Amino acid sequence: MKLYFFILVCSLAACSTPLKKVESPQATYSKKMVESRAMKSFYTNRNQQQLAKAHWDYVPGLVAFSVLKTWEQYPEKEEYYQLVKTYTDHCLQGQDTVHVNKSNIDDLAAGKILFTLYREELKRGNTADAKRYKNCATFLRNKLKYDHSRIDASKPGAGGFYHKAQYPNQMWLDGLYMGPALYAQWQDVFAREISTQENNQSWADIALQFKTIHQYTYDGEKQLNYHGWSADPEDENSFWARKSGPYKGCSPEFWGRGMGWYFAALVDVLEIMPKEHSDYKSLSEIMNQVAAGLARYQDKHSGSWYQLLQYDNTKKSDNKGDEISGNFYNQCDQANYLESSASSMFTYAYLKGIRLRLLNKDTYQPVAEKAYRGLLSNFIREEKNGDLNILQSCASAGLGPAKDPSRTGTVNYYLCGKDVTITQNEGKAIGPFILASLEYERRK
Image (cartoon, rainbow, N blue to C red; front, side, top):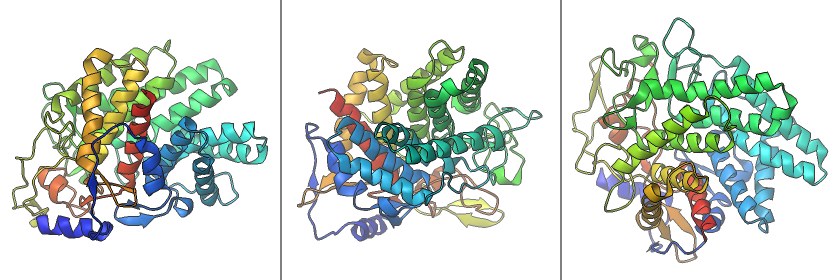
């Protein structure tokens, strides 16, 4: 496995080019990463992408969102804004909607870029494009609010959004960043166009998603959330789910990036949720529970977090694999490892939460400071030409469905799964690193 990791890293970046370890947090690493990776090329589940011509997907969308946020903080970088507009126009192809798969919550997340584009093009007098962006944002919000499959009233968690149609009655932590956070942005920008009653109901619907998944996935003793939960654990697509006990329906482990999506979504939604709404306090309490739990599992030496949150690098896959219906999957002896995308997401959420006074500064500033220094020291490497690389991220991870029995949600899966390879310069690490850097740079 170690040899495979070395070969993989060498194939993604030129091994003949010596890489310098980065230590100082003083540089504006947000812009350096935008110009090194987001404006050139990055990886999405091992496939190379260029943002200007990338497809509509949550990973290019996340990278584009981080580039747009960098432009907002450094508006002299007009080329950043134009790149995101080019990507958006490429995806829209002159229309005001994009193709989204039925009840696929991942397909919505890229729409977060549309709100800034709408407001900016309106300000610049380009009403035609502004209208297209608004229409697309509304299309995506309505797809979720009105058409997306939900857990029905006969099951626990009624009203929760399916993660995808192929995962019936399942909610994953990832989905809170993909769907409800977009839904919240629409409510924030366009609430004046609907009645107060509808606006309040929509915020309650958004809050329901967080309250539901937290109710069923949060382990109070370990202070972490399980990656996924099924309201119907006997369904064949939920073969990975616990069939009984206090965490019935939950997947077996606590996955770093899953909690990263969740923590970031909580902070992003609370930033714009009306404080007078009856559910604001509940979401704030959930966010503080998540923050406390993650601080407990921050690696004291490195400042970063592991792929599997509750373990350190002494935890290894068992080299035997997982037996499903007489077949064995996920066989290797890989050790748990510090993971860059989750660590970046946590750093972003802590720094932003502190800035917005959603999190206690005295409690979490030391966590956030150590986390950002850890990102630079553990994962960021600089080439001779000044370009940055971000190392050691998990390419992908999921649970099932029945047609893919290898995705078991076990320790073996998260360390050895065929789709859970260790990679670098992946969009799911690049975007959060840029966002974390922006928050750190705002403190200067």
